Image (tube, rainbow, N blue to C red; front, side, top):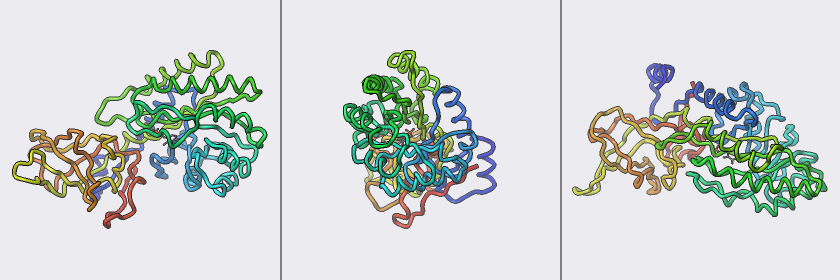
Length: 375
Ligand SMILES: *Cc1c(COP(=O)(O)O)cnc(C)c1O
């Protein structure tokens, strides 16, 4: 814990559950990624944590923004980014929202279907458009496959006809899946991407940009490779497939910039067993799946959970406080907590700066959305 966070906790003592996020860590995560990948423009995926404090900090650092809705575009603008630094990266948009983004000055849009290209043609004339392709999400703890992207053959066809629709075929994008622990997963997508660049060039369509997506990880329970390893592996793949004509590249990190900066403080509400012979204790917290820990779904994201007690670590099932039986955090993932853990104890749920504050219900069972402090 940094001195800043310790001082904050000591002075403010907010009621649990709450997130405290150290903006200094966001800044150093950003700088580390920029240093590792100096040739790629960084579009922060606003959805990971849209707090104005974070957006302002990143805007000041020169970041661009990947927005998924008009409100996210407005938040990026309010943080001081001009519309030329904003990409409307959602492939599923209402035409009125495209028109609104266009009115606000946004000129970079994603699509992955003929119908979406038609909407862009109508509502965002002469904008730069990029097509998202389907890729394998193998190796990712939080896959984003299937719902987004189209088959490369379709991407080819749509980008080929884009000029006739009055928009500029700018490039291709993909997302290898969030919390992608294998840097080699970019290679396949880049192979497909380079082939499409080649084929379209033959047709007189010169793409300029490859959007490498997000997927850069945060360290949770498991160690992950450093940004430099990702940078090196991706650069090698770019060289292999594009040779000496590497296009402009864009990355869209979300989790990697903010995940490690946040810690949720939670209180133990109840410790119980279901029978006299039950081997595992159930530990119920004052935060669960509906209060900001949605990414524990299928136990996909496994946050480090830390108690200040020193007792022998023994297996537990961790669950949230709501009256929904879905609200179990970890049952199979072998979490252990000290055997002297008590009701009323404080637990730290670490690396929770991404996909928590806005990934919560409004007030299911009367539990309020997660309080957050950005310091
Ligand atoms: C969610 C998302 C991201 C961010 O992904 P991370 O894995 O958090 O880096 C980037 N791009 C798009 C299009 C997304 O939907």
